[in-house]
Image (cartoon, rainbow, N blue to C red; front, side, top):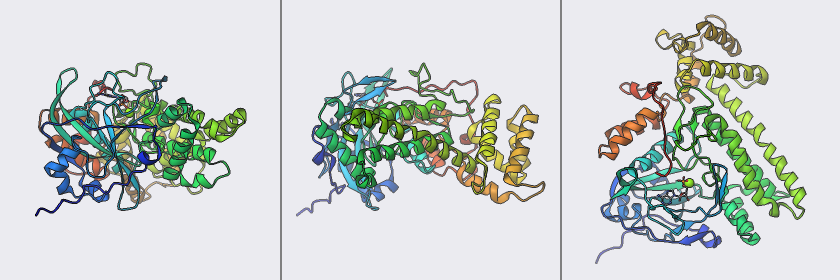
Length: 497
Ligand code: AMP
Ligand code: MG
């Protein structure tokens, strides 16, 4: 007598139970020859899943989307989205499926979601597929962000399907299993609002409050309080992106979560030389989603969320709009404080008794220097710590061409640090090194690793993943991964992957 294997995941599905109208039940497409490319063993453990079971033929069939696991209720989620400013009323999961929810070891509700699992009723002209390179990129960058302490969705696994997908050339196909606090997006609210179904919209908002921002439920006006909470988590999130030079690349409203996690690593990339105009995406001609635009775009997206909530906020449309506007204005103080606080920490400055204006000017002048002299944003902070330590081999001075300007700024910084000449700054330098990464997914390294992985060799990919998941720890033999690519390279990323 054979004993049935325990289920891969202990599903507990609330989205499907509570939000009918916002999804279509659907199945993944068959995958002829699933092969595991990446498995996040740490995340599997968090989810209470057995890594060996996920590696089994049964597990691979599930992770490739061809077999629904026991307890799953796979659906393609419906959502709208402002894409580059223009509204698409009906986007939805064109190549993705929500499998269901799992309560993790810490009691947090997490979505399990497949990307690249075949066409759905939302596929429009798309083939429903995804290629190995972009799915590994999502895994890599998500893990890098997680290691940097930035809220993010994460990949549990990437499985090659054994089938080619047609892009500019034929590429090996893959399915990514994504784990998220939820897949509720600004675009989900836009979809419900466009249906003009206030009962559904209210159910969605109440669901989102209960799942992500429960304190709002007890507020005088729960929906205003909910908006406040989303504004706050997004303002803080985008500040965190800015502090590591992350450029999301496609901040459409369907790619902005209600939970405050980063989602959808498509044409994303990390800025090297500091420049607010940095854009990588091949289709972002106007620089709408440039590095320096991200906070303003986040606020713009939040305004789209606010619009959907107006009927819930109150019966008087004008009064509701005024209340919502006031909340949206609160974005900047939260963002500015998170940014200033973060930059202070990067520079080893204590917030206690500090002068915001003085530190703000010091930071603004630093950024101006980095910009005009084309200094690498990541390297700078590590070398600045080395400067404090008095390590001549790594002195940040070597990054600058206008040495007088650097020396002038350095003197001001040292004064703000309270560093008298000859004072021991090693503790400050160490604190800086604990939060300023050595390793980020640098564009040239990501490109090399993904090209090799697409051709079947995962060694570079695994090496890069190892580096960026221990980003603060400088290690021998990884110098190439801490070095910017040639300045002559214009790095371009692509959507529709
Ligand atoms: P994204 O830019 O990945 O956030 O996707 C935007 C929209 O396009 C979403 O509705 C996706 O589901 C859909 N989409 C992207 N690629 C494909 C594809 N290959 N097949 C079907 N739908 C897709
Ligand atoms: Mg998306």
